[in-house]
Length: 247
Image 1: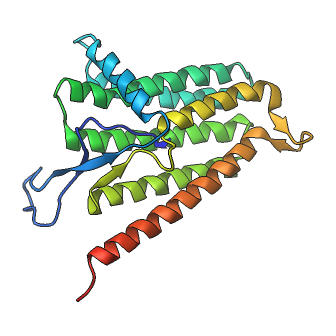
Image 2: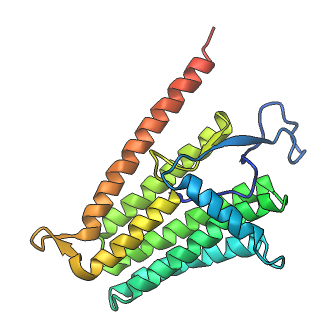
Image 3: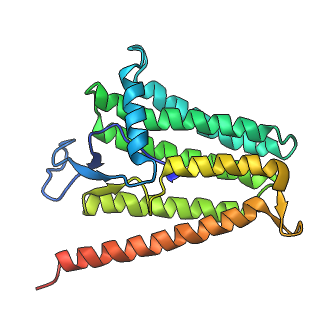
C-alpha cells in the first residue's frame, strides 16, 4: 500500500524518464535516476535484512520471480479478505499473504542491486503498475469482507492512487522518489494491517458495538493520506514555482 502501497524498485535510484532535451524515438535517452528518499521507522533495519537475504538467495531465483510472488500474494490478500466474511480464519491467511507480499515486493529491487542487474525503466514501470493493480484487488476484498464499509475502502483506494500519482510526478519533475511519508512506509502499513487482522478476532465491533474496528481505522487512514496528499502537493508546487519563476 504506497506505498505502496508500498514500494521498492529494482534500480540503484528510482527512474526519472524522458527529461526535456531527450530526442524523440530514442528509448532511454535522457533517462536518469532520481534520489530515493526512504525515512520510515524500519527503513534502516529492513535494508540490512534485505541485503542479508539477497546475498544468500539461490542463483536460480531472480527479481522477476520475486516480483511475481509479491503480486500474486497481494491478489491473494484481496481474495482472502473477500472470504473472511464467511470464515474469519481467512484473516490469518491474509497475514501470511502480507508477509509473502513484503518478501517479494521488497526483495526484488534489493536482489537486482546486489547482483548488479538493475533495469531502472522496466523496474519502475512494472513495480508500480503491479502495486496499483494489487492495491485495487486488496481494497476490493476489504469492501466485500463485511469488516469495512465499501465506501471507506473505495476512499482508501482513491487516496492511495492519488498519492501514487503525486509521487510519480514528483519523481519526474523534482528528481526525488519518496518511499515513505511521515516515517510510514509499505512495511509499517503491512504490520499495522496484520495487527488489525488479529484484533478483529476479538474487537470486530467497538465503542459499544456501534462501529466496525476497520471502519474507524480506515477513516483515520483516509484522513491521514488526504493530509499527506495536500501537504506534499502544496510543498512540491511551491518548490517548483520558486525554481521556475517567470522573469
